[in-house]
Amino acid sequence: MRELGQAQTKPSTALPEEPFFFPGNGRRLFGVLHRPKGTESGVGIVLCHPFAEEKLWAHRVFVSLARDLAALGHAVLRFDAAGYGDSEGAFAEATLETQVRDSIAAIGQLKVQQPDLRTVGLIGLRLGAAVACMAGARCNDEVRFLILCEPVVNGPRYVQEILRASLASQLATHGRVVQNRSAMIEALNKGLAIQVEGYPVTAQLHGQLAAIDLFAPDTRFHGDVLVLQVDGRQTTVREELQQLASHLDGDVEAVAEDAFWKEIKRYYGRADHMTRAITTWLGQRYD
Amino acid sequence: MTEPVVFLNRNGLRLFGVLHHPEAGAGKGVGIVVLPAGVKMRIAPCRLYNDMAERWARSGYAVLRFDFAGLGDSEGEAQEELLADLYAAVQSGRYVGDTLAAMDYMHLRLGLGRFILTGLCGGAITALLTAARDSRVDGVLGIGLPVVPERGASDRPRAATRGQAEYLWGSYGNKVMDPGAWARFLTFRTGYRTVARTIWWKLRSLIRRGPGGWLSSEPTDENLHPAVLPAFRGFARGGAHILVMYGGADRHGWEFQEYVGGPHADRLQRLGDRWELHVIPEADHILSGPSWRQEMHRHADDWLRRHFAEQGSREDRTHAGPPDNRWTGVAN
Image (cartoon, rainbow over all chains, first blue to last red; front, side, top):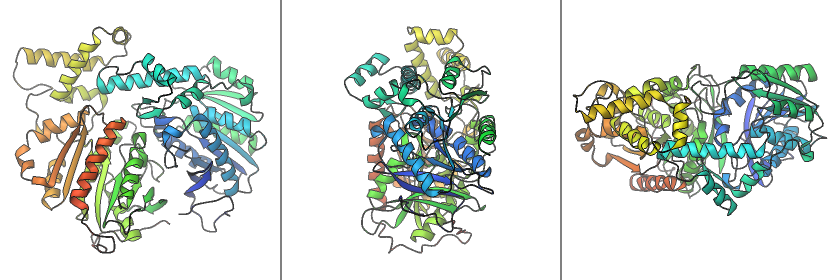
């Protein structure tokens, strides 16, 4: 295996899927490049992963999605942001900002690996969708499209969801709440980190998550957008996602999938409805 | 230094992994293979496996973390529809073959012929089952080792241990005055079956009815994974070492105590210092708390030091040789 720098050229003998490290913001970031199969579409896609344990639960779906996209001739780069997966850095050092910058580094790396790309886009899931939106807004001249799967739209509400997850895990482990919501907020306000399902959430990360606002001017992306509601119970698109799609002049669609980024009874190796919506939308625009 | 690697399993599928090269000197003569837990790939919950591998590499061990076929980044597909069924397949030994391939790969790459297998939960049982089959394995470090085959969630109350029922009963006491708990109870967000069975168990124990029914006062081997005890005994008798660690709040630990540690205490005692059990008080199954992990690391480090520190350098202990049925496919 090799370590790639910005100046590296494409190897002459290459695996269809190649794991490697690439430099990103002073760290070694881990990625897997899925080379396009058959006729190349000229489209390259970076996948932006969700937060903490959601990333692990959703991992195989991302792998299957990347393989399906590569089979259609698209180049795909899956990567771990710093502090996640096999990338360098501790999770406690990871912030929303570092994840956005790492996504931008991944875009650059994809273009190094596949220099003939005509179109580059980002696909993000949950917090990864928010990251994709923010990265796309900073790279409007490089990124042509965003696909936002069940995006985190409202920062304060998302943070409450994270705190609830911490309370639930405390109950499951200890049979009682050891650090209640107020105590967690107090700790964060003092600049201390709290534990959320085994992940240290620092005050800095908490603050950045709470400040997520995909309607803010600095997250305004000007390219093509697809917002996907991924929900097994609702077929009507939620108001906030319709508003997001409208704000970004994009399309919006609901796909029926269970919340595969959480621990659920069903094993999710692939999310076929979500994949079909993505590949159909891409096919209509970039074939 | 860490290196992404791809190697072939015995079915020709590409398995993805990360090889941690030893940092200290010539390196120990035994390699460590870290086996995935459930479906959480080579990272494990909260990056537990990254911590373990980096720590051991600093101590001079070569460590390989990899994904089983059909999981993580590896090729192949798991066909199960339910997570519980996938866990059951893991526990039945589905990935023993991939583990053998991983050892073959480390032999090919680094000349290592002796191994320590480790993992959490499904990784732990895979380690034990592989060790029972392959004489190259010198040690097993099993964290949260499941000894009762995985059941679907609807069957779990039926198979709950006495310890688990006691724990649940105690937790219900705390919830009686908790408005949130009542809100969940009244809005169908509680496991009613578990509650009902726990209450029934408590009532039955209070009126001292005889053993039998869904929670026997005498755990039977019928619930025990059939391969666990033979693997334990056979492996340890061969001169190898087993360390089993559990979190104190891990139901797998209760199951171990009630189905293995208690009923088979005399058999385990005959293994002498070949096997050890360490319980980390109050820790959950995945050792999510920093202090729990630190304790796990300390105990694991001590175990490695006591049993494997004198295994010599890699140069001294090459060519122990894989079994004749080894497969040496390499993808990169």
